[in-house]
Image 1 (cartoon, rainbow, N blue to C red):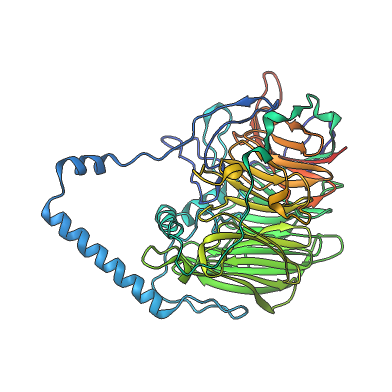
Image 2 (cartoon, rainbow, N blue to C red):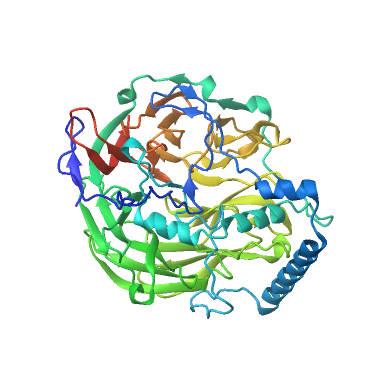
Length: 554
C-alpha cells in the first residue's frame, strides 16, 4: 500500500527499497537502458522554476576502430568477409519475406525461426509506450538499477540495428503514383512559443495538489482514468522482477492485482502494463527465447482484483517488436509491428492495431498500416491515437484517432517524411512532437511539441494558431481542464493556450535527472505526475521512494 502524505507533511513510513547494485561489487554497475529509456536527448528546457536552461544533447560517437580502418583501408580478406555477410543477410531477408510475418488477430502466432533477444524499436516498439524515465542515479553518485531495468536492457539488444533500418525505411522518396494528399500547412507567423507566454511564478495560483503518495523506489506510473493509475512496481526477489498494482487517485490506496507473470514457470516476466477502472492489459516477455504475450483481465468495482484473464496474442521478436499497449474504457489495445528490415521497402511492412474487450478472448484487427507506424498508441479519453502511413504514400504519416469501438473519428496528415516522436489528442484536437528540425514545413519545421490553440473549425487544423513548446520532447502532453500539460526538461508545465500563460510544477530535491514526470494522457479533471527520489537531506531522514502527485488545475 502506498504511503500517503499531506502537502505539508513529511515522508512518513518509507516503502521497501528498489533493487540497487551491490555495494560489495568490485565497482558499481552501469545502468541498463531499454529502447524506451527517456528522455532520449537533453536539450533546452524549463527548470524546476520554469526558467530556461540548456544542456548539451547526447550523441553517439563513431567507433574508433572504424575511423582507423577508414584511414588505413580494409584488407582484401576483410572485404571478402563483409561481402559474404551482406549476402547472408540478404538471403535471410528474402527467406523472412517468403515465410510471411502476419500475426493472427485472436489465435496465438506459432513461433518459427531461431529465437532472438532484440526486437525493441526506438519509437513503435517502446516497451513502456509513452516514454519511461531511465534508471536512476542514487545519492552520492551510486548507480541504481531497478529489476525491470535489467529486463529492459536485455530486451533492448539489437535496438541500434533496428533504428538504422527504420531510418532507411523512412527515407524512401515519394512514388510517382502517389495520390494528391492534403497535409498540415502552418505558416511561421501562425505559431507562438513559450517565449510569447507570461509565466505564473506561483504554481499554486494555477494548480492545487490533491494528494501525494509514496510507492517503492523505481516504480513506473501511467494514468488514463479519473479513478485509478496503473503502477509497475519492482520487487526484492529474483522472481518475479515486477508486479502490477492499481493506485486509487483519491485515497492513495495501492493494491497489487498481478503478483507475477502468468507464464513465470516458462520464463516470462511482466514487462509493461496499463489500466482503467474496468480492466488491465499487460505484456509478458521471455528474454531468453525472445517471445512475448499479451493478456487482459477485468477489474472489480473496487479496482483491487482481476478476473476473466485472457491471453490475447503471442509472437516472437525475431519477427515482431514487443507490442506497445493502451487501455481505454473497457477495451485493451496493442500495436504489433514487424521488425525493421532494410532489405525490404517500408510499404511491405504491415503494422496492426488490435483490440479486445477486457475479459474477452475475441481479438480484432482494428487498423492496418502499409508500413511501420511512427509512435506507440496513445490513450485519449474514449479512443486511441496512432500514426500509420498514408495508404499508397508510405512517406506520409497520418495522425489517426480511433474510437474505443474501432471507428476512425479524426485524422491529420503531416508533410512528407516528417516523423513524429509522439502523438496525442485532447481538448483542441491532435498534438504531436518532433525531436528533429526540418528544412521545410514552415511553422512546424522545428523541434518541440505542437498543439492547436483552438479546436479545428471549418478551416481545419491548417487554419488554427499553433503552440510550439520549444523544449526537447520526451513524452506526449495531456490535458487537465483548460490547461495543456507538457513535460519539460525537469518540470511539468501547464499552458493556458487562450490566456497565453504557463506555470511549472517543480521537481523535488533528490529527484532523478528527468525530474517530475508526466504520467497522464488524454483529458481528465486531474493530472498525475511522479518522480523517483533518492535523497538524504543534511541532518534529515533519507528519502527513497517513487512519489506520485495528483493535481487539479484552477
